[in-house]
Amino acid sequence: MEASSITCQIPSAINDIHLIKHALPQWTNVEGQVLVKFAASPINKVDMMVLSGSYPVSPSATHDGAPIPGFDGCAVVVRSNSSRFQPGDLVIPARLGLGTWRTHAVFPDENLIKLPRDTPPLAAALLRSNVAIAWLLLHEVIPLKAGDWIIMTAGTSCVAHFVVQFAKIEGVKVVLVVRDSEEAEEDRERLLGLGAEMVLTEAEVVARPSFPEPIVLALDCVFGPTGEALLDVVATGATYVLLGVLRGINETVILKAKHLFTKQITLRTFRGSAILAQKEDGGVEALFDGLAQMFVDNLLTIPEIDVREWPVDESVMREVLERVQANTPGTRKCVWLFKDD
Image (cartoon, rainbow, N blue to C red; front, side, top):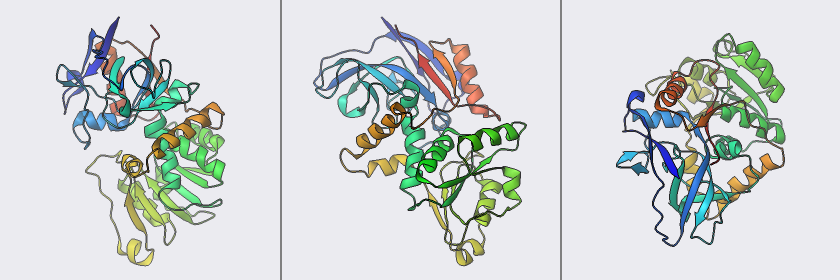
């Protein structure tokens, strides 16, 4: 049996990223060792930041000295020398940087989290950087109650998809902001159908609209003029959270005295990995298990995604990465789906 991996250097241009075929990772029968075969691995925005060298966490996995990218994914246990895992178990990485853009890997058992076996692989692959982030945004930033209104940019993102679903369950009203594009009206109709209370374009938000109820929380993935508009439309005492910089790491906003002195807005950044690291022993595993079970129980749906079958040749792999990097309107989350042997 043969394995394959995507390898790179950090930083790396897309033309310098390679798809290589190689022997299966070495099994040494060390206690706690687990051999897995990946089932699905997404290409997240953070992965593109890693490739560009602009993310603080680098891949720890390598092949012949070359880093293996991919922070998220799910895999099936093939062989185990750990009492915690059995062949057939569905698992996800317990931390960032383990290299999920490959067919096979050998991990120590502390690097894996077990999920319910009947979790859909695509849902499991989105669990850490999308589903869990959405849950944390609604539960770990400020106390929210039924009837509260929040606003979020990057309204067509996977995280926004899950924020709306969690908020709907808990009675929180969500205003989503989408990019100005030819697809804006189609996006508006789809997101209202998902459960968003309102869907606005960036231009509509920049015009500083009014809302039926005070906006107590702003979740901003964009920054720039749209971020400035959020500071103007939120209520006095609201919290503004920066959780992404889709306009680029050097983008700015103009912070006015009225935002801090008059409106007393709290400004925060958000990094889900840091919040998860603060949870007590077993807390992260319990959270992921509960979120996965929500898919099994049909309480959550998977957004429309761009599924790309692995294995691929280098030219196809690079075309996919270029498409994700361009991030043109209408681009869906891309996920590598691995074939069964």
